[in-house]
Amino acid sequence: MNAPTFKLHWNTAGRLVFTAADGTVHTGVVPVRAFPVSAAEEGLSIVDIDGHELAWIDRLVDLPPDMQAAVRKGLQEREFMPEIQRLNSVSSFATPSNWHVDTDRGNFEFVLKGEEDIRRLSGGALLVVDSHGVQFLIRDLFALDRHSKKLLDRFL
Image (cartoon, rainbow, N blue to C red):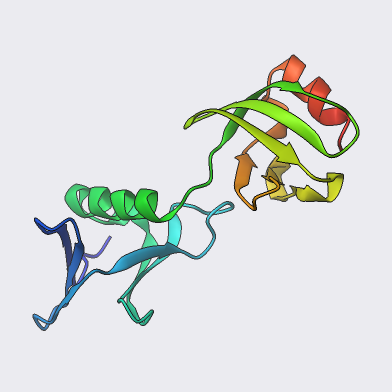
């Protein structure tokens, strides 16, 4: 693991600051994942306010702990993809239907417009898009509890 040639920290105004090896400072940078679902901890870019890449991070764990924390905070502020942990109920097995789910960010109720709004990803993952375009992730279909799998099987 090589030490990064840049530094990242949050300033007092709550903005992420990137300092290049030559001392150039960019305020308001944003971390962006290349593969947010399949390789969330690998392949990240730090971009400036104009969207220009300032640095590439092969693996997040290769950064020092303080910089890892800064990047994770930036990602959390930028991304909103709740992970479904349990399906509590669905109003109907025909679409549109109301779904009541538990996620890593709390309980949600949303409308699934059609079966085509459930997309299969690699490794048993699913992406569920609600009627407002909010994406919910099911990281591992096979790890869900029996009740959740039974409800979900009706839509797959």
